[in-house]
Image 1: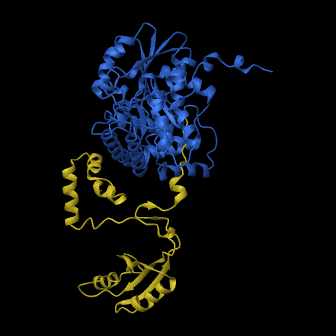
Image 2: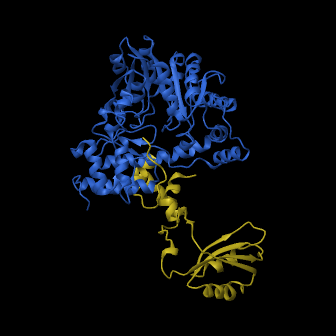
Image 3: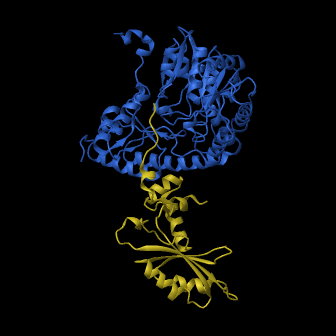
Length: 395
Length: 161
């Protein structure tokens, strides 16, 4: 009999499974659960984009694509970043098309981080940065962002976390789960700290198209002097509702991208071919789709913030992504207890804030990638839950 | 398009307070706007959207196309007004079509009842020169809302992380 635990990579054994899962598993076993827990658009991919994917299959484009991605797609992506975010990249060697933004994050971390390197990870944040760092042999250094700062990373917090071993800073904004956005002035402060150190930045801009209000998302690479030290990761999932197509990309300095490409070549070879054809169409004719979805998210966001605040689940106003991160402290409960009682008594699934880092304790993530009708019903149930004194029993 | 009207057209349940939050306006502004729309006849009422297919013995619906001879000055209006005046007529539209001019939806308790209504009441109108009746078998979507249960309610997304 083989002792498998002795065979598995120790680093991997030490990594906890994602805390988001637990509640989904509970929800899966119950009927009539209203979930506000999913982190992907409720929209389906715009029809004209799907049609291009279908057309690619009809024409028999079923072979591997070039490792780096089709040149036409790379040109469209670099045009898009220049057009929407004012940063110019060379489509020949400063870009890599990946299997979702997630692969690009993994590639970037494994390309840069080695034994003993410290990686700065602001939290609450998406759950992948820490395990990827650990697997690469690096040491995650968590920076806890604060509700009173709108969950933004501040220059002082950054400065205090830098050591001679710091290699990489993760900038996960617009942020999942808090909805926090770093505006130009906030990014400039960060840049001033970084200028003094040899630290690279992984700017995860996957929610870059989903910011609300007049100001658009500012890419960290657009901040003076930062392009040369930044790898931008983004993709098609959130902007164009294309999660299942698995298509993302990394933009950055040639010496870094070319090494990431090596890893990508050996591990993945190339991103899916039909998805790349669909993505070209999305970039060419999809601006109005983005606009339509953003307006819809914005209405839901405003509704949700108003309702949650009215019930006493106060939240700072999230300016990006599609999450609200209310404080659940008035309940006197821990995040996990709050969410567990809520799902058992009112069948509403939301995600405890501490799934996104210890500092998320006392908060919960509420997703608004759901129809208004669905959100309305969930709010009625949450209010009933609070009125019952957060009792955990079904009524 | 006007956002307030768009939201109300999909769901009139929201309080003015909620609408104000969604639109980033004050509650008073929203109230005033709704009053104004009512005054101008833009908002004509708020009905529940009912899927009659699910109501036992709720009868049948038919879509009736009418070919009409237009009249000097009034065009199709006179005929449309007469068609509208029947209580079992739910809606009447003037269409830009080569085949028909007016389209009406009609409710009745049986197919026979509607057939009789068309032959005795509508085809006999002075300027009506032809009709075509289609009976509705299933309502898939109406008033912007899907009536197709399984598609609407089933969550197809998986939580992956």
